Image (cartoon, rainbow, N blue to C red; front, side, top):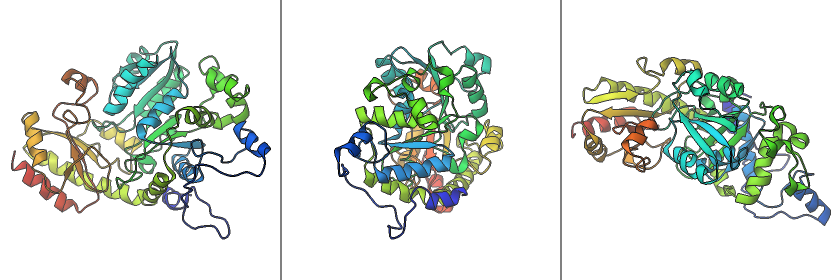
Length: 423
């Protein structure tokens, strides 16, 4: 099926007499007639539902839709985008391991990798994604387990050279994990360019209405874990907590997602509620329509900002003058997303005055919503970072992140005009 059809009809396949719309299975537990059936579920010998912390029909239907949209073999929903990135990494890493990540990523992920994972004994080396392959190769160690990047960086709006990153990762025998939140699979499918695992904050465009917080981890099924048994013992050697079961032997291409559910969800429990998954599914049904409007509006807004003398710079890959324009033409031919990064002539206070003068556009700690919103990362999401750390993370202190919604673009431009007049 094409992407638009998957958005509407993927995941849930009602049988004769079943609800046309995906139901909310708002239940913690599921009944069985005998103990043997339940025991087989606990031993991973049969598929089925017994406790929502591990699996739930509503959650699984929505995960299946996202996997289909991305072209993956399986997916798992999580309670947030942050938990999706944590689970994607922790599923194949443990104390004593090392990861390599782009430094142009969301501030929360930067902190997760650089601070929190370090407390768990997992080190991270951040690299400039625009560096040469030779320079990036130097960051790898014998205990490196993965390479991580964002398709479109948040908030810098840089486009990742996915093929280059995949080539580097695979030359070191590790998978490439790509956070595909901003373009969504409607505008980019990283698996087609060599990525192995994709993550999402489904809180953003996939939901699109700021109604639920969630995340998703999708596996392509393409990375051959068995070629690197010594690197990934959790997948390739017996798991004593499941009677010596080996995930790659029993589940094949579904080994990664099965382990994520059977181990991490079992022990950490970062699940979305079925109600949240239901709301996410409603958003997914119009994702293909909304993304086109987001991109159309953002292109108009970016062109307006670039032409205004009070604007110092604009990063939007749809602009022919943008440094990522050629990468966007390659990876994002149908459009990128609705997020624009720009800076005003002046200082940090200039940005604050501009934002405080907006009337229609709201200052919120959110992005990728149907409603247009704005944020000053240095003052908000990245305020824990020094100016030096901001620059290391690819965030200029004067950067304003404008997430253009699906309203009438003339109204949005008028609001920006009147706010610029007040700086």
